[in-house]
Image (spheres, one colour):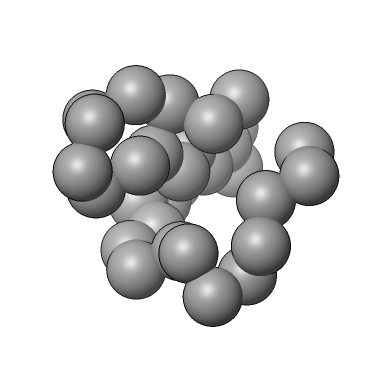
Length: 32
């Protein structure tokens, strides 16, 4: 996704169907 790993502060994980999501903590927008 072209994101610098240093800019990731949090990772949310949903166990149903093994999906996950990451977002920008400052803007609240999802990365993917």
